[in-house]
Length: 114
Ligand SMILES: [Zn+2]
Image (cartoon, rainbow, N blue to C red; front, side, top):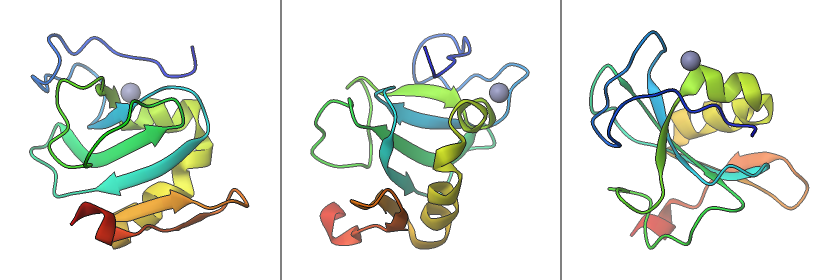
């Protein structure tokens, strides 16, 4: 299992133990292909949503809840999958990052969220 999943208690409660802010993660099978960023909901929230290739289909990236997403400490996630680092940077700056066909992170298509 690539992605460690700290015990945050019931999903969605956002309780964090000794770890840092969490990311919302969909799927677990690398590579991740899309990363979104939104204003964090609290100090426990990194604001990032990371979507892996085996993620379930989602209609939209906002308000994900109860559809298979999991809260994972962002630092642990990055530790396990350093490939997402550049994507996180881009998503933080532009709101969304996508992995292109060459395996490079590019600015994502925000119109998808409309
Ligand atoms: Zn951690």
